[in-house]
Image (cartoon, rainbow, N blue to C red; front, side):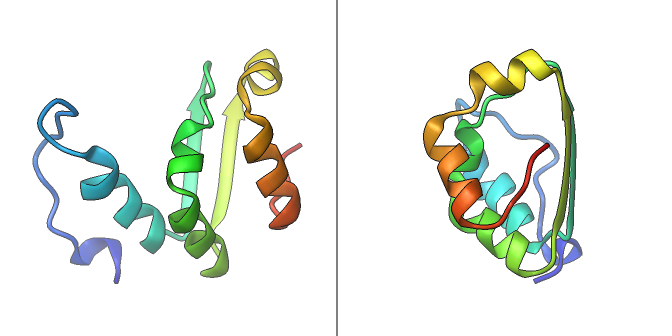
Length: 92
């Protein structure tokens, strides 16, 4: 399904909706490009979205993440690092 085929809400509120299920995961599954810039990196969303992220990669998706070096080393979980190594994603 293409991103343009989804019916998006005008806004999302995590107190009222499961934002991952209603927005983030469907978008990740269908996207071919993901750009993120952040001063703080929390890998939790990528663990939650691992199946959607694998679909993104298998569909030829390209990800660019720009963040503070300190944030990358201290906030990335061990499981996420292991999954990256096992599933041919490279972060430098």
